[in-house]
Image (cartoon, rainbow, N blue to C red; front, side, top):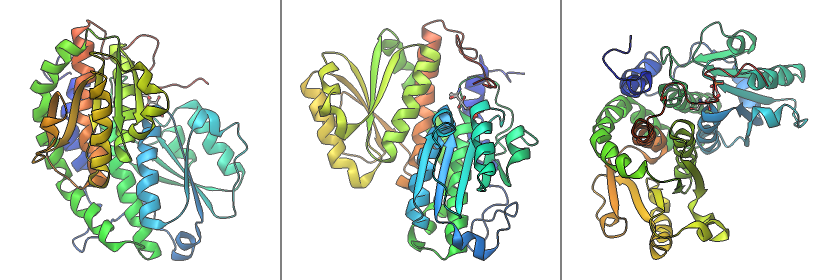
Length: 365
Ligand code: M6R
């Protein structure tokens, strides 16, 4: 049932081009619109939304952080993102037209479900992004966007995450187009990028041998840092979570500009730093941050676009990624970071699909 792969996680990593294509099926029209027939929202309702709360746990929370940036850019609706275990006990403030977006692969996460119930009790409309048709979250939400990733068995979330990103890009474009776009050029860029995304995800799987080679040294380390700005910071958070979860290497993700407010004290000779540099408008800033950690003799692996001519002289090692719109970069960057966590965990002899202390579906508080 692992289809020839050694672990479910590796199989699911390799299923991503298809999973992403399945999430997109029927949802991109020829005239470049995001189509979500399952929503079928009235114009007045869509135009009335004045606040969005995104609530999720773990990897789904990171998808929500990406979702916030694209939703705010395309709709100009203020968006808050919070982990469900905090949100549900915080007495959040709802306007009469607050939309709550919950994200859960399994649709059974106890905290996310409780947050959904709280939001409904307070009169908010709830949209769920989930992978499981008929799950508790899917049954209780007002609207459901299914990700169609197929079953995800490994505890570490891979294809569920990349398909959540796709669902959120589609939802942001759908809502923006319905309301009257604030930024049609970005909508077009995102929709065109989505069409090419299965192909880009397939190409980025070719980084597997390079990530395997890197992981063999890296697996002996006890601590690592992931840095980036903007969407690269979100991608860094997800990369660090994946690494901790299955390799048990301590990892910290940092907004690159925050390093000198404390974390730089931990950077010493040979400390691995994974630096993400896919956000063109922040590129030079990130390069400066890489130079800061290099000056403390960190060992830097940088991830940047194919064609980059500067990075090779700045970082110790560079991994080149097939170029996509920077808005879609988190979906491409996720893949080599999943592979890094996977190969490091294998190298350390860990139970990759069932990491210690963790469950696939967290149905208790
Ligand atoms: O089923 P859910 O999406 O609600 O699960 C949320 C988290 O428990 C989950 O994403 C977790 O963080 C992953 N194991 C991380 O890889």
